[in-house]
Every structure is written in structure tokens, then in C-alpha cells.
Length: 432
Ligand code: UD1
Image 1 (cartoon, rainbow, N blue to C red):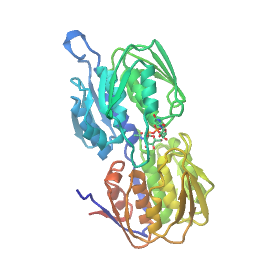
Image 2: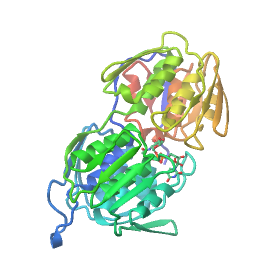
Image 3: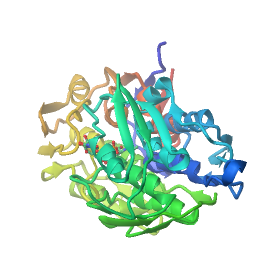
Image 4: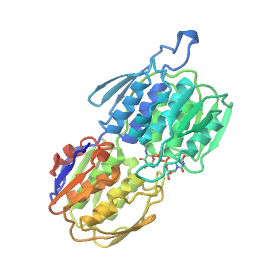
């Protein structure tokens, strides 16, 4: 099946106001967490009927979010979806298998492991292989679950997990602050008995958002936003109404477009406090960046300049997901910049495509050296992953002439109709 393409006529200033959607990396674990509601077994009567429905607002219309909803349905949840509000009723969710097809649709489906195990005590799914960003191991997820008494076998690429006796107190130190592993441990530990301490936990704001949802459902979690999380299992969780936090990576993408086109944007519905590392890079490029309560204004009236070495790090460091966006913007800066990618192996996928547009980037291993050029030129390019695709959109908006981006299904995984957002602020962009 040939996927859609984006046609972008570059060179127009991006100016106006954009409302940022709910965060992809928050909505996926929250949707997984809805499974835990009304999830306590009540004798032979099946699952407890107390409040198994959650209403999740600010849910972005992303293909990954729709894939998560398909997984929930396949597990027995009832879902209704209106605009950006999704209601999940997990009263009858007793499924314990995620099909191979659904696992492949979304790499992040591994976050369902902790939730399914927490709810039904068993889970079978195919082992997630590598992806566009390189190998995506789950050893930390599995090691932690084993520490929590889960028995795990892996046979012919199938992961079979069964909950066992949970220790009264489990103290788990992650060797690196994995976002997904932290989420899976939280999801598995929220329901049931025993205390779980996660040290060197990921501190990404999306983790605190998941904790916020779980706490509203009745979970006992403390330390959110810090690197030590303490979860005390409770016998039952109830559904609640919750609004997903704004997407800081989507916001950074719009900032990149304003920077490269010499534009001005007001981003609304954001949380500037989650975006400091990114905002400071755009300031260093010479943009005016002004955070307000729930808004960020960016003005790029002067040509952008090179920046000091940007190093991707776990939060609150510079996010790996924003790296390709900044890489694209720097292609048209004055001077030479260096980016060091510390999180994923294969995260300069946009570089060869940006070179086709006239960029001067040397990328080897973890390091990319970007020598700014005066102009980029439109070209046919391909999105090789989600953020590399977004980076190409940013570059195309700042390029002269027409760019055609293929394989944009990657972009749809993390942006709700990117063409609508950019058209509303002056871009000439359409989906064909
Ligand atoms: C999440 C985000 C993704 C973001 C990433 C890092 C979601 C849906 N995705 O991905 O957008 O880029 O965080 O901020 O929230 N690792 C191991 N063993 C493990 C787990 C991870 O070695 O068991 C390594 C990974 O290979 C990678 C690093 O840890 O090098 C970070 O991965 P992790 O934080 O787990 O990222 P994800 O949760 O997959």
C-alpha cells in the first residue's frame, strides 16, 4: 500500500497561533493504565464492577493512539471516542494476549505488558524487535518484573509472563532511567499488595502525568517528577476523568518551523516548565523565546546562528525526540554546530535526506556536525521515522521550492494532521 505524501512549498514565514495537542508519550501509557480500573477480582463474580470507566480528555488523534485503542478493544474494553475525548470502560477486560499484528503496529505496545499483568495476572505478546531507531531492548522491563515475582519465558519470539508472589517490598534500581521500564513497573505495581521503590526512575514529565492519572484512580504513588518513585499497591482502582498533558515535542516542532522560516508563533496549551532545555537551544540560535503560564511565544526575526554542542540526555536534559527538529533548523543557521546523540543509536535518519535538500551535515556514530548553509532547496525525500519525518517538514518549510515527503505514516504516529496545523499559520502544505 502506498502511503500519503506531503507536498510543501517552502519559504513562507510561519506566523500565528497554534494550539498544541495532548502528548503522544503520555496518552499511550495512560490508555494502557485504563485497563487497571475496576480490575480487582471479586470472588466468582468476575471483575469488580466499581467504576471501570475512565474519560480521557485532550487525547491526540494519532495513529499510535488509535492502535492503543485497538489493543484495548482486543482485550475486552469498550471504547467511545468523540473529538479529543476517549472513554474506556474496562469492566469486562479479561484478555491477556496482544496479537502479533497489534504489537507490530506500535512499538510502544510493550507498555501494555505491566497493565495486562497487573489486571489479569498473565500476558502473552510477541517480543518487540528493533525499530527505525535501532535495537529497542526491554531487558530492564523484564528484569524489574522478575524482581516483582513475575515468571517470564521467551519462546520463538513470544514473551509469556505470569504473575507470581509479589515481595512485600521490592527495591528496584534501574541501570538507566528508561521511560518505558519505569512505566511498566508503575503499571504492574499500582494494583495489588506490596511496596515498590524505583530508583533512577525516568523523570520525564509524561511519567508524572501517568502517575497523576493513576493517583486520580486511587493509586498510592509518591515521588513523581523525581528519580525515586514509591508505589504502594492498592486492592482496587476506579476510573476517573483526566486530561492528558500537552505534547512538548510537538511544541518544539512548531518552534523549529518558526526558527527556520524567520517567523513568529504563539504556542498555546503548553507547559513551558517542561520545555526549558529545548527553549534554551532556540534562544541560543538567536530566537526570542518567551514563556508565559500556558503559552510560549517564539520570534525569529534575525537569521538563526549556530549553537554550542547539543547533547541529548534523559529529562531534564535535551530530549532525543527534539534532536532531529533542531538538527533541521540548524541546517540553515550561520556557523557550525555539533549534536551528540546519547539515547538512541540510529537517530540521524533525517541527515541523508536533509543533504538532498542542500544541507551540509556529517554524521558518524553519535555525532553530527552541521555546517549551516544559506539556503535549502526542495527535493523529494522520505520520512524514515517519526521525528526524522517531522524534521523534514521543518526543513521543507524553510527551503526554496517544493519538497515532497513520502512515507508520512511515520509522521501520523505522532502528529495529528500536521498539514492542518502548519496551513493555519501560513504554510503551503498539503497531503496528497
Ligand atoms: C520513550 C519515548 C520515546 C523517547 C524515549 C527517550 C514513549 C512512547 N516513547 O521511549 O519517544 O524517545 O522514551 O526519551 O514514551 N533501554 C535499554 N533497555 C531497556 C529499555 C531501554 O537498554 O529495557 C535503552 C534504550 O535502548 C535507549 C534508552 O534505554 O537507548 C532509553 O530508552 P527508553 O527510555 O526506554 O525509551 P522508550 O520508553 O522506548
